[in-house]
Image (cartoon, rainbow, N blue to C red; front, side):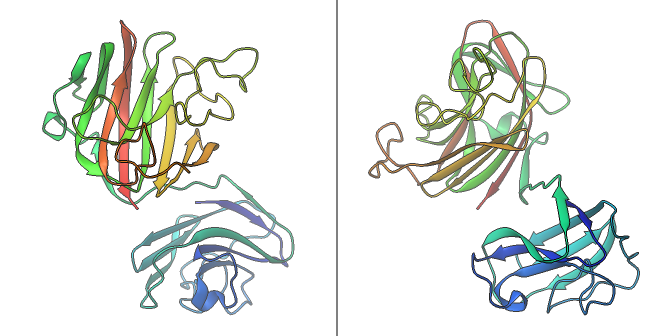
Length: 301
């Protein structure tokens, strides 16, 4: 959901499910157009597919506007400044692709570009039936507000349903100082945190580019976070995308890791590339530490 600031002469757009080379935006992608009212497809239209509805107020030039697109399989919906602009069912078979910001003519600015997966919410609807009993020294408490609180020493709690390629978004709050926690994924079910680990640790040395222990958002022992963007006593928002051998993470909406596992395939992710489905585990690490997971959204890719 980007916010845009077009000029009067602007012709731009948001490309969805696009390849890197687009010859015809009416066929090769979904283009959410950003264009004047005299354009055949004014702002909010899906170029070549659906023209913006007459009920939408035309955006004023040189002002910031919100553009919201929801793409759910073959169903594409668009909102401009909260007003629904398009509702379209596609039959062309576009199933995947990249996201692009288009420039054609006239200056335009973008800000607050946000993505979130379409899927099911594990938390706050989760209860104990979704999880194995805690393993190791930690205790897990499911609160009335739907969060999971982990307290104690080294251990984990394991989500029963396995996932392979996924987008995972979590909000976690460390409740004691210098907490070392993490989110493990593609784990070998039932084993002790034998998976890829997205680290949760807020410590840094001279500056935020020098993490104490790889940094929040790092893939532990594989690639450190570019910077530590999380803080003690504040919720941290983390996004993990695992697509085949490539894993990327964002902390507070900022990309901190983009890593491809080039090791030989192996069922054990400690020894090689694991792309098959595995479980998700939430980690407790140090004696006396407390961490609260307030939300956990998981969407298979």
